Length: 167
Image 1 (tube, rainbow, N blue to C red):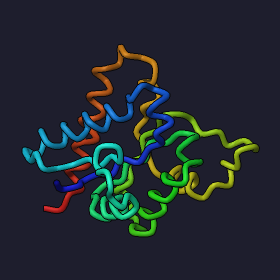
Image 2 (image 1 turned 60 degrees about the vertical axis):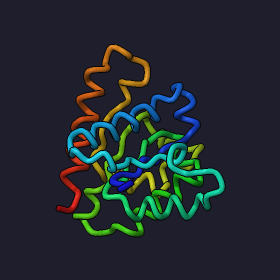
Image 3 (image 1 turned 30 degrees about the vertical axis):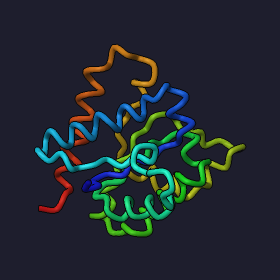
């Protein structure tokens, strides 16, 4: 498999929406494959792509390092999970130039509180992600009538990933 994107998310968020985030990632992977004609392209997700007995930290690092695009699913939980923070830190340490920054495509799934209490207003990772234009998936949390719109947004995201791949 050729990892083209790394899907970084909180499992708590995925569980809260009955696996919707995993379904979005799966649909994105299918869309990338269909649009490219290459069924070996992969959008990495930990629950699908780490096997029993694997050194999961090594697998995550390798997947992040080999990805063309990093897709963090931004929620309040995202910034409280050590694994999510580590994934984002690894990506940011690898890609610091403005051109490379275009390879981060945040999906905003829930608003982030910036009031006192959870330290969010002083969180450097949150501040870094706020500088980057995000894809807004907040309306899709509860509204199943937006299925056509979410498919359109996933298709646009697949196009963006493919446009960033080296020739």
